[in-house]
Amino acid sequence: MAVNSLKQTQNMPSSTSALQVGSKASTDVKKSEAAQATKSVANAYAKASQPPAQQAAANVQISPRARELNLARQVVESTPDVREDKVAKFKSMIERGEYKPDAGKIADSILSEAIRDELSKDAEVALT
Image 1 (cartoon, rainbow, N blue to C red):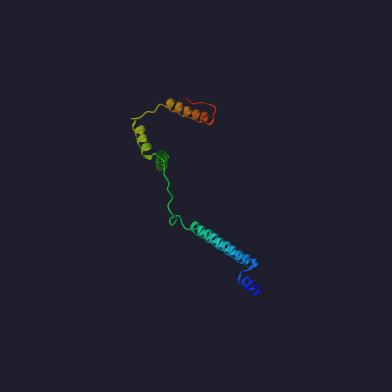
Image 2 (cartoon, rainbow, N blue to C red):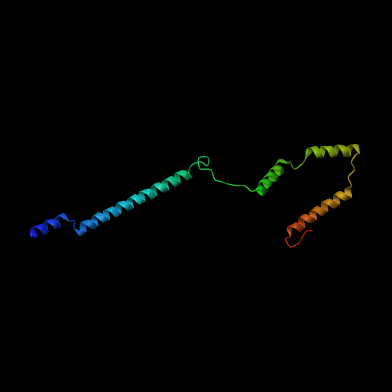
């Protein structure tokens, strides 16, 4: 009977060898997880370094108000500061005597606009 019990204990793994097997499996799992995390980070860096055309298109919606503002900006940018055609037209009309601007009204308008501009700089002044 002593021989049988000795054979049984020899065939059974010892508790330290079972712990070693379990420890090895745990280490293998951790290494696998670390490898996957490293691969995931590498993929993220590779994707971020691609030109925008190669990245997946983002779903962006522009509001109608933003479209209007963009159109207004484009119109303002495309309009010259001085409209040479209007200047030439009025210049020729003045030379021919067909247009006689009132210097007083022009001066009043220039001063009114300058005053409005100055008042608009002060946030406490309400414009009507």
